[in-house]
Structures are given as structure tokens and as C-alpha cells.
Length: 425
Image (tube, rainbow, N blue to C red; front, side, top):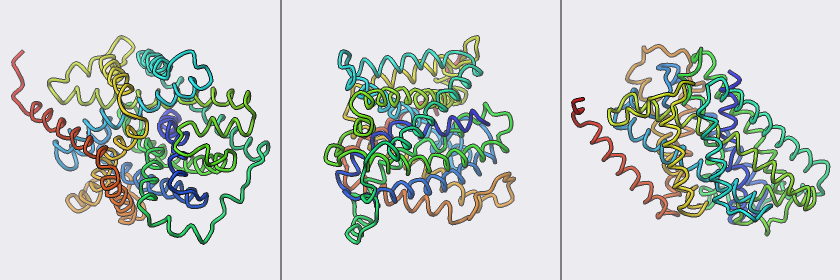
């Protein structure tokens, strides 16, 4: 249970919360609407967590969206969701996290390149994932606790050490046009990217001793904890650093820390923030390789991915995911990578949430150990908000959306190959 909660929290608290604010302030220079964004994103994620918990408890297995959509809708939908998980769901966020890690360390110690720092961390976490499950669990819990302590220290520092202007967070009449604007929807994309991982425990359901009892608790408690942390942390960022210095910059946490604690103290905090990403990258590798392993069990030409070493770690899946991450780190800017990720993830999660009312209609008498509360409000809130975000993303960022379409086409080709007759051994 504790490891599952740690995976949920560590999967969410990664690059997004430490980098998104700079892009939000650029288009929405108002504190209160930005805080509302983070609350909306948290509530939408909570609705998604309710729906995912219902689906997984009906048919417990690792694999995330790949498993859920294969059983609930159609194997094609599941395969495409698995393909999205490999590329956009795990590899691209891992690459983005490694880039941010490298950016923070390069700012403090410019001797190495951003890629050098980021690649070094990916290789280190790859090695950790090759150890036993018990070792990975303990590593994950320890670094997640360190990350939470970091966030608490930063928030307290902003409240008691910094001399920020908290009036910047109060609502104003001039804020109203922001709430219905296209930039607000795009800003919500960045927020939802920061909340990506609220379904983290779903990917390791097969590793849990009592899925139906512990999974819903892990999803819900982890998501609620992160909502509180995110609102407080972004409030601390906005009152601690000049907004003009934050606009369009990914290293907002480092800038805010320097403002609060001075140059040396800020660099020290930036260093701790960088190593706080260790838990995030570890959790994403842990969950992502389990999706690859389930694909290896079901798809004949991916059978190698189901192999394990003597410690029980799926080493081919670990090495493949890490290699894709290292390649993605060389392509695109952080913002382009983030928007490409989120468009595909929104599409995949929308299908999973839509599967809840679909199965309620198609299989009304099926055993449901956990039911999404406030149904049908929970799935339709998630679907309504994410549809609006996806529309705004396609309209405002067509290039990144086109890359997502190309990714789906490749997935269709791979599915067609998977449907071919299995070759004789």
C-alpha cells in the first residue's frame, strides 16, 4: 500500500509542477486564475482516478490503459493505448524529466551539458530497476519521502523566510476573461501534465497483494495529497520570484528558491529539487516497464520484453524504455515535448474513462468491487474538461498534434503486424 501511494505521488510530482508556471504566467498574468487552474486540474484528476479504480478492480492486472481498453472496448484500442504509453506516457515524460534535471544542474555547475547530466541520471535509474522488487520498493518510498520533505521545506521557506507579496494571489474583476480563453485551456494542458501519474498505481496492479482493497485507496489518497501540495507550492512560486523573470522559463523553482534563500541557498535548493526528480524518474521507469512486460506477454514479436533476470526484474523492458528515453532527449524543445505528450495522454485517458459508462451499460450486472462515486458526474466531468483541452490543443498547437497523429499511425502498423499469423518456432 505504501509503495503504491509512493508510486502515485512520485509519478505526479516531477517536472510539471517545477516547470509549468513559467508557461502559464506568460499567457495568464494573474495569480488567482492560476491557482484555480491547479484546483481544477486536481479535481479532474480525482474524477479520472475514481473511474480507473472501478475498471481495474473489475479486472485486476498490470498494464494500465493497454489492459483496460483491451478488455473493456477492443484489442485495437488497447494496443494503441499501450503504444501511447510506451512513447508518450512514459518515454517522453521521462525524457522531459531528465532534461529538467540536466537544466537545473547545468545552471549550478555548467561544466557538464544538460544532456550529460540527464543521461547520467537515466542510466543510474536504469541500473536501480534491475535489482529486486523489494529493493526498488524501498528505494521508491525513501526518495518519495525526501521529495515531500523538500516541498514542505520550500513552502515553509516562502511563508516565513521570503518577503513575497501574497496580495498577488487575490481574485480581481479583471481576471474574468481569462477563464474562458484559449490560453486558459492551453495552460490547463500544462497543469494536467503536472498531474500526469495520478493513475500510477494502475500500471503495477499485478505487483499488489490485494488490488481491490488497496488500489482505490492508493489512487485517491495519493491524488488528494498532491492537489494540496501543488496549490501551496505554486502559490509559493508566484509570491517569491519576479513574474517577468519566470515567463517561459522551465526552471521556475530554482529562481524562486534563489529569491527566498539567496544565491547560495537557492543553488542548494535547486540541487535538492534536481535530486527530487530521482523519485519521479524511478517511478515512471518502474511503471513503464510493467506495461512493456504485459505487452510482451500478449504480443508474439515482443515476447522478449517478458523475460526477467535472477532478481525478477524485466531487464529487456528496462533497457528498451531507457534507450527510447535517451533518444527522445535529443529531439525538440521541452515545451514541444510536453504538448506532444499531453495530447496523446488525454486521448488515451479519455477512452479509459469513457469505458466506465460503456461497461455500466453493456455489462450492468458485472462484479464491481469499487464503484466510481457521484456517477455519472465523475466520468462526464473528466470527459468534458479533457475534450475542451484537446480541442484547444489541436487548434492552437497543430504541429505537436500532427506528431501525435503520426505516432498513432505507427501504432496501427504495429498492430497489423501483431495480428499476422505467429511464425513457427
